Image 1 (cartoon, rainbow, N blue to C red):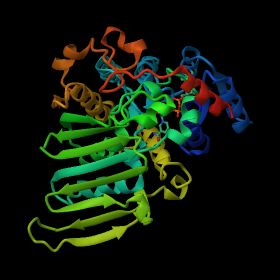
Image 2: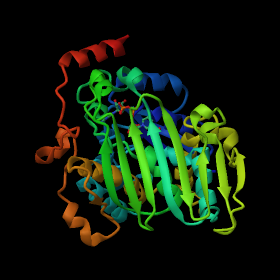
Image 3: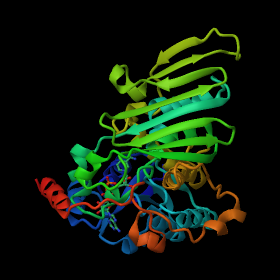
Amino acid sequence: MKKIKIGVIGARRGASMINYSKRAENAEIVAICDKSTKLLENQKKNLDGLKIAFYEHFDDFIKHDMDAVVLANYANEHAPFAIKAMHSGKHVFSEVLPVQTMKEAVELVEAVEETGLIYAYGENYCYMPAPYEMRRLYRENKIGEFEYGEGEYIHNCEPIWPSITYGEEDHWRNNMYSTFYCTHSLGPIIHITGLRPVSVVGFEGTKNERNLRTGAKSGQFGIEMVTLENGGIVKSIQGGLYENSIWYSIYGSKGRIECAREDAEDGHIERVYVRSDKVSGEYKQVFESYKPERDHDAIGRDYGHGGSDFYTMYHFVEKIKGNPDADIIDAYEALDMFLPGLFAYHSILNGSKPMQIPNLRDKSIRDDWRNDTSCTDPKVAKDMLLPTAKNGTPDINDGIYAHVKRLWGK
Ligand SMILES: NC(=O)c1ccc[n+]([C@@H]2O[C@H](COP(=O)([O-])OP(=O)(O)OC[C@H]3O[C@@H](n4cnc5c(N)ncnc54)[C@H](O)[C@@H]3O)[C@@H](O)[C@H]2O)c1
Protein backbone atom coordinates (compact mmCIF):
# COMPACT_ATOMS: atom_id res chain seq x y z
CA MET A 1 0.00 0.00 0.00
CA LYS A 2 1.38 3.41 -0.99
CA LYS A 3 1.98 5.51 2.10
CA ILE A 4 1.17 9.21 2.04
CA LYS A 5 4.23 11.26 3.08
CA ILE A 6 3.32 13.61 5.93
CA GLY A 7 5.11 16.63 7.38
CA VAL A 8 4.00 18.21 10.66
CA ILE A 9 4.59 21.77 11.87
CA GLY A 10 4.08 22.27 15.60
CA ALA A 11 5.44 19.43 17.70
CA ARG A 12 3.29 19.93 20.82
CA ARG A 13 -0.26 19.12 19.72
CA GLY A 14 1.32 17.88 16.47
CA ALA A 15 2.85 14.99 18.44
CA SER A 16 -0.53 13.27 18.07
CA MET A 17 -0.41 13.48 14.25
CA ILE A 18 3.28 12.49 14.25
CA ASN A 19 2.29 9.45 16.27
CA TYR A 20 -0.55 8.65 13.84
CA SER A 21 1.80 8.87 10.84
CA LYS A 22 4.43 6.76 12.59
CA ARG A 23 1.97 3.91 13.24
CA ALA A 24 -0.42 4.16 10.29
CA GLU A 25 -0.70 1.74 7.40
CA ASN A 26 -1.70 4.52 5.01
CA ALA A 27 0.85 7.22 5.97
CA GLU A 28 4.42 7.86 7.06
CA ILE A 29 6.07 10.80 8.81
CA VAL A 30 8.91 12.33 6.78
CA ALA A 31 9.46 15.86 8.15
CA ILE A 32 8.86 17.83 11.34
CA CYS A 33 9.13 21.56 11.90
CA ASP A 34 9.14 23.50 15.14
CA LYS A 35 11.00 26.61 16.17
CA SER A 36 11.57 24.95 19.53
CA THR A 37 14.79 22.93 19.30
CA LYS A 38 13.84 21.19 22.55
CA LEU A 39 10.67 19.78 20.96
CA LEU A 40 12.66 18.71 17.89
CA GLU A 41 15.16 16.90 20.13
CA ASN A 42 12.28 15.07 21.88
CA GLN A 43 10.93 13.94 18.51
CA LYS A 44 14.39 12.79 17.35
CA LYS A 45 14.41 10.47 20.37
CA ASN A 46 10.80 9.37 19.78
CA LEU A 47 11.46 8.60 16.11
CA ASP A 48 14.94 7.14 16.53
CA GLY A 49 15.82 4.91 13.57
CA LEU A 50 13.36 6.48 11.12
CA LYS A 51 14.47 8.72 8.25
CA ILE A 52 12.96 12.07 9.21
CA ALA A 53 14.05 15.61 8.33
CA PHE A 54 13.85 18.24 11.08
CA TYR A 55 13.36 21.95 10.42
CA GLU A 56 13.16 25.10 12.53
CA HIS A 57 11.72 27.29 9.75
CA PHE A 58 8.49 26.77 7.83
CA ASP A 59 9.91 28.14 4.55
CA ASP A 60 12.61 25.42 4.56
CA PHE A 61 10.23 22.70 5.78
CA ILE A 62 7.64 23.35 3.07
CA LYS A 63 10.20 22.59 0.32
CA HIS A 64 10.61 19.03 1.64
CA ASP A 65 9.42 16.19 -0.60
CA MET A 66 6.07 15.28 1.00
CA ASP A 67 2.42 14.88 -0.05
CA ALA A 68 0.69 16.61 2.83
CA VAL A 69 1.26 18.99 5.70
CA VAL A 70 -0.32 19.00 9.15
CA LEU A 71 -0.59 22.49 10.67
CA ALA A 72 -0.42 22.24 14.45
CA ASN A 73 1.18 25.64 14.92
CA TYR A 74 -0.48 28.59 16.69
CA ALA A 75 -4.28 28.58 16.35
CA ASN A 76 -4.38 32.10 14.92
CA GLU A 77 -1.70 31.48 12.26
CA HIS A 78 -3.09 28.53 10.30
CA ALA A 79 -4.47 30.28 7.21
CA PRO A 80 -1.24 31.87 5.90
CA PHE A 81 0.59 28.57 6.31
CA ALA A 82 -2.27 26.58 4.73
CA ILE A 83 -2.24 28.89 1.71
CA LYS A 84 1.55 28.68 1.32
CA ALA A 85 1.45 24.90 1.67
CA MET A 86 -1.26 24.48 -0.99
CA HIS A 87 0.59 26.79 -3.37
CA SER A 88 3.64 24.52 -2.82
CA GLY A 89 1.55 21.56 -3.98
CA LYS A 90 0.80 20.03 -0.58
CA HIS A 91 -2.53 18.83 0.78
CA VAL A 92 -3.35 20.42 4.15
CA PHE A 93 -4.72 19.20 7.45
CA SER A 94 -5.32 22.22 9.70
CA GLU A 95 -5.72 22.12 13.44
CA VAL A 96 -8.34 24.43 14.91
CA LEU A 97 -8.98 27.24 13.99
CA PRO A 98 -9.08 27.67 10.20
CA VAL A 99 -8.57 31.47 9.95
CA GLN A 100 -8.68 34.51 12.19
CA THR A 101 -10.10 37.15 9.84
CA MET A 102 -12.51 37.45 6.93
CA LYS A 103 -9.56 38.45 4.72
CA GLU A 104 -7.90 35.11 5.50
CA ALA A 105 -11.20 33.29 4.97
CA VAL A 106 -11.50 34.64 1.41
CA GLU A 107 -7.84 33.82 0.70
CA LEU A 108 -8.20 30.30 2.10
CA VAL A 109 -11.20 29.29 -0.03
CA GLU A 110 -9.57 30.82 -3.11
CA ALA A 111 -6.34 28.85 -2.48
CA VAL A 112 -8.38 25.64 -2.22
CA GLU A 113 -10.21 26.44 -5.47
CA GLU A 114 -7.07 27.50 -7.34
CA THR A 115 -4.94 24.50 -6.34
CA GLY A 116 -7.63 21.80 -6.26
CA LEU A 117 -5.78 20.22 -3.33
CA ILE A 118 -7.39 18.67 -0.30
CA TYR A 119 -7.92 20.84 2.74
CA ALA A 120 -9.19 19.04 5.82
CA TYR A 121 -10.12 20.85 8.99
CA GLY A 122 -9.12 18.87 12.06
CA GLU A 123 -12.22 19.50 14.18
CA ASN A 124 -11.74 16.25 16.01
CA TYR A 125 -14.76 16.65 18.34
CA CYS A 126 -16.98 15.85 15.32
CA TYR A 127 -15.32 12.43 15.22
CA MET A 128 -15.82 11.54 18.88
CA PRO A 129 -17.94 8.38 19.16
CA ALA A 130 -21.26 9.96 20.21
CA PRO A 131 -21.31 13.02 17.90
CA TYR A 132 -20.21 10.81 15.01
CA GLU A 133 -23.05 8.38 15.73
CA MET A 134 -25.45 11.34 16.03
CA ARG A 135 -24.41 12.29 12.50
CA ARG A 136 -25.07 8.78 11.18
CA LEU A 137 -28.48 8.63 12.88
CA TYR A 138 -29.48 12.12 11.78
CA ARG A 139 -28.54 11.35 8.18
CA GLU A 140 -30.76 8.24 8.27
CA ASN A 141 -33.69 10.39 9.43
CA LYS A 142 -33.87 8.91 12.93
CA ILE A 143 -35.20 12.13 14.52
CA GLY A 144 -36.60 14.00 11.51
CA GLU A 145 -35.80 17.61 10.67
CA PHE A 146 -33.38 19.46 12.95
CA GLU A 147 -35.11 22.02 15.20
CA TYR A 148 -32.75 22.76 18.11
CA GLY A 149 -29.33 21.69 19.35
CA GLU A 150 -26.74 22.43 22.00
CA GLY A 151 -22.98 22.03 21.97
CA GLU A 152 -20.70 22.59 24.98
CA TYR A 153 -16.94 22.81 25.18
CA ILE A 154 -16.20 24.09 28.66
CA HIS A 155 -12.60 23.74 29.70
CA ASN A 156 -11.33 25.41 32.85
CA CYS A 157 -7.70 25.80 31.79
CA GLU A 158 -6.58 27.83 34.82
CA PRO A 159 -4.62 24.92 36.34
CA ILE A 160 -2.79 24.22 33.06
CA TRP A 161 -2.38 27.83 31.82
CA PRO A 162 1.41 27.89 32.53
CA SER A 163 1.95 24.75 30.43
CA ILE A 164 -0.11 26.05 27.48
CA THR A 165 0.97 29.73 27.38
CA TYR A 166 4.47 29.54 28.95
CA GLY A 167 4.14 33.05 30.42
CA GLU A 168 4.13 34.64 26.93
CA GLU A 169 1.94 37.73 27.09
CA ASP A 170 1.23 37.68 23.35
CA HIS A 171 0.42 33.95 23.19
CA TRP A 172 -2.76 33.49 21.12
CA ARG A 173 -4.53 31.96 24.11
CA ASN A 174 -4.01 35.22 26.05
CA ASN A 175 -5.18 37.43 23.16
CA MET A 176 -8.18 35.45 21.93
CA TYR A 177 -11.76 36.65 22.48
CA SER A 178 -14.51 34.67 24.19
CA THR A 179 -16.14 33.18 21.06
CA PHE A 180 -12.91 32.56 19.08
CA TYR A 181 -12.44 28.90 20.05
CA CYS A 182 -15.99 27.99 19.02
CA THR A 183 -15.60 24.98 16.76
CA HIS A 184 -15.36 22.25 19.42
CA SER A 185 -18.86 23.20 20.60
CA LEU A 186 -20.54 24.26 17.35
CA GLY A 187 -18.61 22.10 14.85
CA PRO A 188 -20.23 18.77 15.70
CA ILE A 189 -23.75 20.21 15.29
CA ILE A 190 -22.76 21.53 11.83
CA HIS A 191 -21.16 18.21 10.84
CA ILE A 192 -24.14 16.22 12.14
CA THR A 193 -26.81 18.23 10.35
CA GLY A 194 -24.92 19.50 7.27
CA LEU A 195 -26.86 22.75 7.67
CA ARG A 196 -25.26 26.15 7.03
CA PRO A 197 -25.36 28.84 9.74
CA VAL A 198 -26.99 32.04 8.51
CA SER A 199 -27.08 34.39 11.52
CA VAL A 200 -25.79 34.65 15.07
CA VAL A 201 -26.27 36.51 18.33
CA GLY A 202 -23.33 36.50 20.75
CA PHE A 203 -23.05 36.74 24.53
CA GLU A 204 -20.00 36.97 26.77
CA GLY A 205 -19.34 36.06 30.40
CA THR A 206 -18.09 39.35 31.82
CA LYS A 207 -17.16 38.04 35.28
CA ASN A 208 -13.65 37.12 34.19
CA GLU A 209 -11.62 37.21 37.43
CA ARG A 210 -10.23 33.71 36.87
CA ASN A 211 -9.06 34.63 33.36
CA LEU A 212 -7.41 37.82 34.59
CA ARG A 213 -5.38 35.99 37.23
CA THR A 214 -3.80 33.81 34.50
CA GLY A 215 -3.20 36.70 32.06
CA ALA A 216 -6.01 35.70 29.65
CA LYS A 217 -7.67 38.85 28.31
CA SER A 218 -11.03 37.50 27.08
CA GLY A 219 -14.42 37.27 28.73
CA GLN A 220 -14.75 34.13 30.87
CA PHE A 221 -16.91 32.28 28.33
CA GLY A 222 -18.66 32.91 25.02
CA ILE A 223 -22.03 31.88 23.62
CA GLU A 224 -23.23 31.78 20.02
CA MET A 225 -26.98 31.51 19.42
CA VAL A 226 -26.92 30.43 15.79
CA THR A 227 -29.80 30.21 13.31
CA LEU A 228 -29.26 27.55 10.63
CA GLU A 229 -30.46 27.69 7.04
CA ASN A 230 -33.57 25.58 7.81
CA GLY A 231 -34.60 27.87 10.71
CA GLY A 232 -33.23 25.52 13.38
CA ILE A 233 -31.42 27.10 16.33
CA VAL A 234 -28.18 26.09 18.07
CA LYS A 235 -26.77 27.18 21.40
CA SER A 236 -22.99 26.80 21.39
CA ILE A 237 -20.95 27.63 24.51
CA GLN A 238 -17.21 27.53 25.12
CA GLY A 239 -14.70 28.85 27.61
CA GLY A 240 -13.61 28.65 31.18
CA LEU A 241 -16.60 28.06 33.42
CA TYR A 242 -15.42 26.36 36.61
CA GLU A 243 -16.53 22.81 35.78
CA ASN A 244 -15.62 21.14 32.48
CA SER A 245 -18.15 19.82 29.98
CA ILE A 246 -18.16 18.30 26.52
CA TRP A 247 -21.75 17.62 25.55
CA TYR A 248 -24.05 17.59 22.50
CA SER A 249 -27.81 17.33 22.10
CA ILE A 250 -30.04 17.62 19.02
CA TYR A 251 -33.81 17.76 18.78
CA GLY A 252 -35.66 16.95 15.55
CA SER A 253 -39.29 16.84 14.42
CA LYS A 254 -39.70 13.27 15.76
CA GLY A 255 -37.07 12.76 18.43
CA ARG A 256 -33.88 13.68 20.25
CA ILE A 257 -30.33 12.31 20.41
CA GLU A 258 -27.74 13.31 22.96
CA CYS A 259 -24.54 12.07 24.51
CA ALA A 260 -24.03 11.27 28.19
CA ARG A 261 -23.03 14.03 30.60
CA GLU A 262 -19.59 13.40 32.08
CA ASP A 263 -20.81 13.35 35.70
CA ALA A 264 -23.42 10.68 34.90
CA GLU A 265 -20.45 8.26 34.65
CA ASP A 266 -22.24 6.40 31.86
CA GLY A 267 -19.65 6.62 29.09
CA HIS A 268 -19.71 10.40 28.47
CA ILE A 269 -18.96 11.14 24.78
CA GLU A 270 -18.87 7.42 24.04
CA ARG A 271 -22.58 6.87 24.77
CA VAL A 272 -25.67 8.06 22.90
CA TYR A 273 -29.22 8.32 24.23
CA VAL A 274 -31.82 8.18 21.46
CA ARG A 275 -35.55 8.76 21.90
CA SER A 276 -37.58 8.86 18.71
CA ASP A 277 -40.69 7.97 16.77
CA LYS A 278 -40.88 6.40 13.31
CA VAL A 279 -43.44 9.06 12.38
CA SER A 280 -43.87 12.46 14.01
CA GLY A 281 -47.03 12.46 16.16
CA GLU A 282 -47.19 8.74 17.04
CA TYR A 283 -45.66 9.32 20.54
CA LYS A 284 -44.24 5.86 21.11
CA GLN A 285 -40.95 7.63 21.85
CA VAL A 286 -38.82 4.49 21.71
CA PHE A 287 -35.67 4.79 23.84
CA GLU A 288 -32.23 3.32 23.11
CA SER A 289 -28.91 3.84 24.87
CA TYR A 290 -25.64 2.35 23.61
CA LYS A 291 -21.95 2.87 22.91
CA PRO A 292 -21.50 2.99 19.12
CA GLU A 293 -18.64 1.13 17.48
CA ARG A 294 -16.71 1.91 14.32
CA ASP A 295 -14.51 -0.19 12.03
CA HIS A 296 -11.15 1.08 13.30
CA ASP A 297 -11.93 1.32 17.01
CA ALA A 298 -9.40 -1.37 17.93
CA ILE A 299 -6.63 1.05 16.88
CA GLY A 300 -8.57 4.31 17.22
CA ARG A 301 -9.20 3.89 20.93
CA ASP A 302 -5.46 4.26 21.63
CA TYR A 303 -5.69 7.88 20.46
CA GLY A 304 -6.73 11.01 22.34
CA HIS A 305 -10.10 12.75 22.58
CA GLY A 306 -12.15 9.55 22.56
CA GLY A 307 -10.31 8.14 19.53
CA SER A 308 -11.21 11.18 17.42
CA ASP A 309 -7.53 12.04 16.97
CA PHE A 310 -7.18 8.81 14.98
CA TYR A 311 -10.27 9.30 12.82
CA THR A 312 -9.49 12.88 11.70
CA MET A 313 -6.10 11.82 10.35
CA TYR A 314 -7.39 8.51 8.98
CA HIS A 315 -10.09 10.24 6.91
CA PHE A 316 -7.67 12.94 5.71
CA VAL A 317 -5.17 10.41 4.40
CA GLU A 318 -7.91 8.22 2.89
CA LYS A 319 -9.32 11.29 1.10
CA ILE A 320 -5.90 11.94 -0.47
CA LYS A 321 -5.81 8.29 -1.54
CA GLY A 322 -9.21 8.70 -3.24
CA ASN A 323 -11.30 6.58 -0.87
CA PRO A 324 -14.94 7.62 -1.62
CA ASP A 325 -15.96 6.90 1.99
CA ALA A 326 -13.44 9.35 3.44
CA ASP A 327 -15.30 11.98 5.49
CA ILE A 328 -13.36 15.23 5.87
CA ILE A 329 -14.40 18.74 6.86
CA ASP A 330 -13.56 20.94 3.87
CA ALA A 331 -12.69 24.65 3.94
CA TYR A 332 -16.31 25.83 3.44
CA GLU A 333 -17.58 23.64 6.27
CA ALA A 334 -14.66 24.75 8.44
CA LEU A 335 -15.82 28.34 7.95
CA ASP A 336 -19.41 27.32 8.75
CA MET A 337 -17.98 26.17 12.08
CA PHE A 338 -15.75 29.20 12.75
CA LEU A 339 -17.49 32.27 11.30
CA PRO A 340 -20.39 32.07 13.80
CA GLY A 341 -17.75 32.66 16.54
CA LEU A 342 -16.20 35.62 14.72
CA PHE A 343 -19.58 37.22 14.01
CA ALA A 344 -20.86 36.39 17.50
CA TYR A 345 -18.00 38.54 18.74
CA HIS A 346 -19.02 41.40 16.44
CA SER A 347 -22.52 40.91 17.86
CA ILE A 348 -21.16 41.06 21.44
CA LEU A 349 -19.30 44.29 20.68
CA ASN A 350 -22.57 45.71 19.28
CA GLY A 351 -24.81 44.98 22.26
CA SER A 352 -25.73 41.42 21.14
CA LYS A 353 -27.18 42.63 17.85
CA PRO A 354 -27.95 39.77 15.39
CA MET A 355 -25.30 39.43 12.65
CA GLN A 356 -25.55 37.73 9.25
CA ILE A 357 -22.90 35.08 8.56
CA PRO A 358 -21.34 35.40 5.09
CA ASN A 359 -21.36 32.37 2.81
CA LEU A 360 -18.06 32.47 0.93
CA ARG A 361 -19.20 29.74 -1.46
CA ASP A 362 -20.78 32.76 -3.19
CA LYS A 363 -17.92 34.38 -5.11
CA SER A 364 -19.90 37.60 -5.64
CA ILE A 365 -19.68 38.59 -1.94
CA ARG A 366 -15.96 37.96 -1.45
CA ASP A 367 -14.82 41.47 -2.37
CA ASP A 368 -16.90 42.83 0.52
CA TRP A 369 -14.62 40.95 2.92
CA ARG A 370 -11.26 40.78 1.15
CA ASN A 371 -9.70 43.58 3.20
CA ASP A 372 -11.37 42.86 6.54
CA THR A 373 -8.58 42.19 9.05
CA SER A 374 -10.65 42.75 12.20
CA CYS A 375 -9.55 40.43 15.02
CA THR A 376 -7.79 40.66 18.38
CA ASP A 377 -4.30 39.81 17.07
CA PRO A 378 -2.42 43.14 16.77
CA LYS A 379 0.06 41.72 14.21
CA VAL A 380 -2.73 40.93 11.75
CA ALA A 381 -5.54 43.38 12.59
CA LYS A 382 -3.46 46.56 12.18
CA ASP A 383 -5.98 49.48 12.14
CA MET A 384 -8.94 47.07 12.58
CA LEU A 385 -7.83 45.80 16.01
CA LEU A 386 -10.72 44.70 18.26
CA PRO A 387 -10.64 44.79 22.07
CA THR A 388 -10.22 41.33 23.63
CA ALA A 389 -13.40 41.65 25.72
CA LYS A 390 -16.72 43.46 25.60
CA ASN A 391 -15.59 45.95 28.25
CA GLY A 392 -12.25 46.63 26.54
CA THR A 393 -8.83 45.00 26.57
CA PRO A 394 -7.92 44.61 30.24
CA ASP A 395 -4.61 45.88 31.62
CA ILE A 396 -2.71 42.92 32.96
CA ASN A 397 0.06 43.48 35.44
CA ASP A 398 3.38 42.26 33.92
CA GLY A 399 3.98 40.39 37.16
CA ILE A 400 1.23 37.94 36.14
CA TYR A 401 3.17 36.76 33.07
CA ALA A 402 6.43 36.56 35.05
CA HIS A 403 4.59 34.43 37.64
CA VAL A 404 3.07 32.16 34.95
CA LYS A 405 6.55 31.80 33.37
CA ARG A 406 8.03 30.76 36.75
CA LEU A 407 5.29 28.14 37.18
CA TRP A 408 5.98 26.87 33.62
CA GLY A 409 9.71 26.63 34.43
CA LYS A 410 8.93 24.38 37.40
N1 LIG B 1 -8.13 19.62 18.43
C1 LIG B 1 -7.71 19.55 19.68
O1 LIG B 1 -8.22 18.76 20.47
C2 LIG B 1 -6.57 20.42 20.10
C3 LIG B 1 -5.95 20.25 21.35
C4 LIG B 1 -4.87 21.09 21.66
C5 LIG B 1 -4.43 22.03 20.75
N2 LIG B 1 -5.05 22.14 19.55
C6 LIG B 1 -4.59 23.08 18.54
O2 LIG B 1 -3.27 22.74 18.16
C7 LIG B 1 -2.52 23.90 17.83
C8 LIG B 1 -1.26 23.96 18.66
O3 LIG B 1 -1.59 24.08 20.01
P1 LIG B 1 -0.58 23.64 21.17
O4 LIG B 1 -1.42 23.27 22.34
O5 LIG B 1 0.39 22.66 20.64
O6 LIG B 1 0.15 24.96 21.62
P2 LIG B 1 0.85 26.21 20.89
O7 LIG B 1 -0.09 26.83 19.98
O8 LIG B 1 1.41 27.01 21.99
O9 LIG B 1 2.07 25.52 20.14
C9 LIG B 1 2.30 25.64 18.78
C10 LIG B 1 3.62 24.95 18.44
O10 LIG B 1 3.98 25.37 17.11
C11 LIG B 1 5.29 25.89 17.10
N3 LIG B 1 5.31 27.00 16.15
C12 LIG B 1 4.46 28.06 16.11
N4 LIG B 1 4.76 28.86 15.08
C13 LIG B 1 5.82 28.31 14.45
C14 LIG B 1 6.59 28.69 13.33
N5 LIG B 1 6.33 29.80 12.64
N6 LIG B 1 7.63 27.90 12.96
C15 LIG B 1 7.92 26.77 13.65
N7 LIG B 1 7.22 26.37 14.75
C16 LIG B 1 6.18 27.12 15.12
C17 LIG B 1 5.57 26.38 18.51
O11 LIG B 1 6.97 26.38 18.82
C18 LIG B 1 4.80 25.34 19.34
O12 LIG B 1 5.59 24.21 19.61
C19 LIG B 1 -3.46 25.06 18.04
O13 LIG B 1 -4.04 25.37 16.82
C20 LIG B 1 -4.53 24.52 18.97
O14 LIG B 1 -5.76 25.15 18.77
C21 LIG B 1 -6.10 21.36 19.22
